[in-house]
Structure formats: C-alpha cells, structure tokens
Length: 528
Image (cartoon, rainbow, N blue to C red; front, side, top):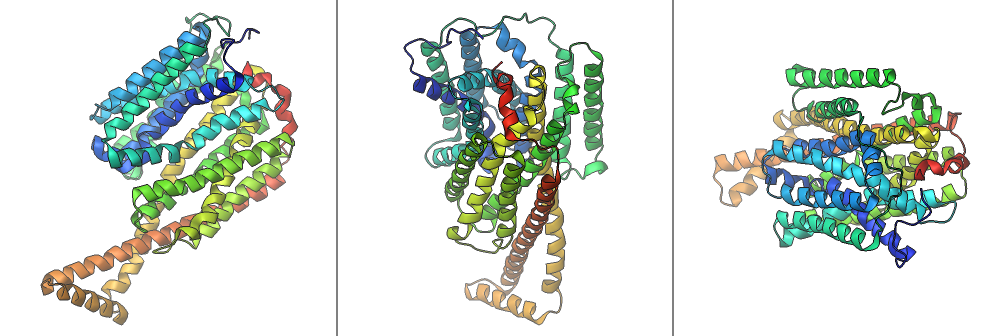
C-alpha cells in the first residue's frame, strides 16, 4: 500500500475510526433486517419461518462464495468510487425489497445483497486495522468488526420491535436504506480519490469456480434447512439438492486442484491449526444454535412479548462485549490459545447445564440473567481468538483461502446447527408428547380428576357441557405440548453440555494448539 492516506488530511483519526465502523454496520443490517423478527417477516412475505432461515443462508452463502473473487473488483477500482458505488447499490436493494412479496424474487434479491455485503468488507476492515498504531492493531480492529456482527441480532431486533410498534415494516427498510446514503456521504466527504492497491485487470476472473461453489453452497444449505420439513431422503427434491450440491462441490474441488492459479488454494488444509480451527468454529456455531431454543421458550412457553424478548437480548449482548474485551486482553498478554479456548467453551457449557434447570413453565428475569450473560461472555471470548487461530497459521499468500475456511466454518456451523436443533426439537417433543399423553388419555385417576375440574371451570363460565369438555381437553393437551417442549429443551441442553465437556477435554489434550504470539508474526497477512 502507498504511504499517502486514503483519507483527507483534515479528518482526525478518531473520526476515521467512527466512519469506518459506521460503514461496517451494513453487514449488521443485511444479516439482521429480516431475521430480527422472523414471525412478522414471514407473514409479510407469506412464507414459513424455514424460508426466512434459508433466505439468511442465501445471503451468507453468497458472501462466502463472493470472497473468492472480491479482491479482483476492489483492486480494479479506486477505493472511493468502489465503496460509494457498492453502498449506493446496497441502499437500492434494501429499499426495493420493501416492495417484494414474491419469495422467489426475494431470494434473488438476497443473492444480490450477499454479493454486495462481501464486496466492501475486506477493504473497510483493512482500513480500520491500519488506524491503530500499536502492535495490537489486529486484535482491536477485529474486535470492532466482529463485535458489530455479534451485536447485530439484539441491535436490529430492538429497532425492528420499535418500528413495528410505531410504524409499518417498510419504514424500517427505508431507514436501513438511508443508512447506506449516510455511508456514501461520509466516503464522499472524507476519502481521497487515489488508489490504495495496484490495479489488476478484471479479465480472467474464475467465474466457473465461483458459480460451482455458489451452487454447491446454496443447494447444500437448502437441504439442511428443509430436510426435516420434507422428510429427509423420502423427498426426491431433497435427494436431488444434496446430490447436486455434492456434484458441483466435487467439480469445484477437481477444477481448483488442476489449474495453475486456483481461486482457492487447498494447500491450506496441510496446516493443522487451520483444520482444528475449522472444526472448532463448526462446533462453536452448533453450540450457539441452542440459544434459539431459549428465545423460542421465551415466546411460546413463558409468553413474553416481543419487546421484552428484544430487551432481554441486550443482556446477552453485554456478555458479548465483556467477552470481546476479555479476549482482547488475554491476546495482548499472549495467553495460550489452549487456555482461551478451554475457558470460552467452559462458559458455554456452564450456560447449558445451568439453563437445563430453567426450562420450567415460568421463570423470573432474575433467574436467567447470570447463565444468559455467561453464554454471551463465552461467545465473545471465543470469537476473535478462533478467527486469528484459524487464519494466521498459513503463509500470507494463502490469506484469502484461509479466510474462506474461517467463514465456511461459521456458515456451515450455523446452517447445520439450525438443522440439528430443528430436528432434535421435533423428534424429542414428539417422543415426550406421546409419553405424557398416555397419562391424560388413560385411566389415571389424577388425570381424570384434572379433566373433570377443568371441564367444570368452563361450564361455570357459561359454556355448554360438550363445548366445555372440548375446551378442557384442548387446554390440557396444550399444557402437555408445552411440557413436552420443555423436556426436549432440557434434553438438548444436557446433551450439548456434555458434548462441550468432551470438547474441552480434547482441547486440553491437543498438541497442535500453538501460542498466541504466533498471531502477530504475520501482521501483513491481514492488511495486505
């Protein structure tokens, strides 16, 4: 990079940091604007919640694929013009999505948004890291960026709830689009027009590899999101999607291994730390997926309204911030990654064991504060160290490939984590419902007494005997359904908790986990 700053001379450093951080908020918006309130967004588009989950996978998966070719675009255009164009297009797509009610068109728009989300991230992150003059610039820069992604869900959800209470859903999208206009204005005023990288022609972009890997990602995600709903391999559609994903993925691997200058260098997998980091990322995101069960319980069992659930998530976000700060401190003090990983996964394991006893028909907010915060601390504590550990163990020439591996771990961990939790919840809820139903429909004296009392209570309210009997059974089976869900939650949390204990033991015994000091021998890896 050239010595001349991309920013105009009158812009102070503190303002540069704020501007770059604001520009990173578009990632929060594109990932969270529809998933922040799945129920409302699903009704707005007349789709199922699984469809919204897949829409998020489309955005994230397209981002993952676009990283392969992103550097060619950012190197060809001057940074100022490039970023202004990208943010203008992001604003247009977000506002346009307010008028889309057809789900197929909406998915195409999410593909476009995934591409646009990927294009400015590396450039902005690079500029942000360079603003810190200490040897810990990588830690600070990454903590800022990935901290914003971690905080996106509670941040966007609280905004969404407020908008839904006061305005139509479309106004939230309008405001999201206006934020992109703010980004364009800030870049226009503070950026210079010169280049920060050597110009590379746009020809010979490996479009074939891009379309192969993108097809494989989207088809694979479709399989994992919809498999339970469509009865897995009993559905010809699911078989086709999985087979097509594997075929296109195999063709991508075959092509990359044959060409002289591959878009993705498979030699990165020769490094043990990268392989371990990928597995840890994958397991980390699966363990994070259980938090959705907690939020579902808040809605459906504890009957908390959306504004309360949104507010409660700030508690978890506070834990994320504490974890990010603690992780940065540990990294600056060169604490062993083995110790960091063991502490982080231990906190998440404690959350699972503690919360197992909180899946009851009703709880007070004070009961969940400590374990809920511990989960946030554990997630924040692990996030940046996992990224640095996964990607810094390879040579600088493989920086993009190692970054793709890290993003792949996050993407497939979250996608398969959703699939695992969805299937486990359905299977275990049915199992417990059948067992509990036997006590209601059988000759159990206590059950019959409860049915009789419930029926009498409805008769006392003015219902006929027949209607009262129907309502009594409906109420009792509603209670059984809720209890079945609670038992399923307890079972899932217990299994995940023990799984994390096994993982912590394996981490303690692993000999490939190297000292954190290795991260900072390759600073150019992150800013080149």
